[in-house]
Image (cartoon, rainbow, N blue to C red):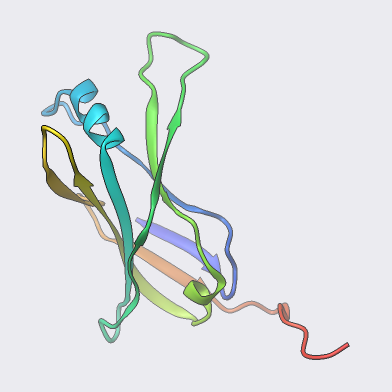
Length: 131
C-alpha cells in the first residue's frame, strides 16, 4: 500500500479502513476496537531510523446511511505534524492497536502488505523568513 504526501504537508490525513475478516466476529472486533489505544510509527526505509515512534493515532466511525443492511465502517488514522514530513524520502509506517477490557492483546496494521509512505519534494516555499 502506498501513501503520498508533500514535504512539510500536514494533509491529507493518513487513514486506513479496518477490514472485515470472515474469521473474526465483526461486532465483537468493533467493540474491542472502541476500547483500544492506537499509535503510529514510521521509519526510514534506507536506514531503519524512526522518524515517528508510537505517536497517538485515532479511530473514527463512518455510519452507513444509504443502505441499513451494510455495516458501519471504522477507520484508523494519523494526523500529521509538519516535522513528520520535513524530510524527503520513503518510509514504512504501521499502526499498533492495543486492546483493553475483557479482551486484551494487540494488532499491527496493515497486516497483508507494507505501508510505504512517499514524502515528495515541493516546489512551493512554505516558510517565510522575513517580511
